[in-house]
Image (cartoon, rainbow, N blue to C red; front, side, top):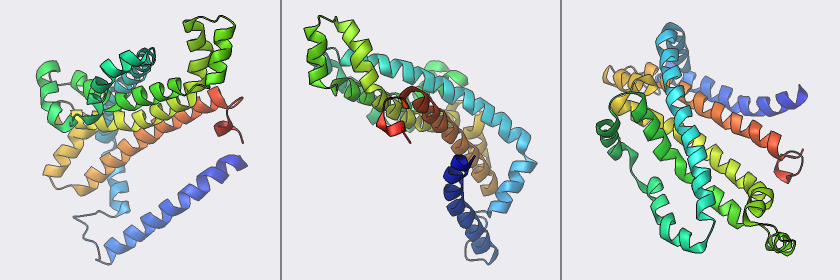
Length: 253
């Protein structure tokens, strides 16, 4: 319990100070409420429109989680494939970089044409935005295996597949998990962008509230989207703790 409080309290103090400060700045008129609503107005919107907002959150969560799952499995598989030889890296890695450089807001209308309005467009958008960090971190981790250990496996006649699954992949886990942490937040962003164009969810709530100049509702939806991203980040941290705590320094107290 003390460990949990020791981690939560230091992070909560700046948040509380910021919210109190913003509330005061808006109430004294230094910041206009129609530009930045006071935290109390955002909280009241969450309570008043909770059914609409949490229904939208459920839809966004489904799209973001599906896109994240696809990017995690596909990104790790592509990273393993690229790590198999230098020739394969030179031939295919530049195309993997495409996922990092593509402007998703420009491609989103094409996704609607290809997949139609609804969940498939949201999932595709989340997948495109979040896959590259998984590819890059998986490849970097697999290529960073200690050469001495690789020579030892080769000396004992280990096959390439045995070396991959018993040495290179476990050694790459910390970097793979780092890629998944980044991908989790990006998947939420991609899902929101997809919903601007072809879905419902929080992206649609933000778009409609923007046209109505309901900044309190925009902030409430953004807050829920941020909470979703933090939940994904926390899940990956928990997974990292379970997988690495017995042998890797990053997860040892």
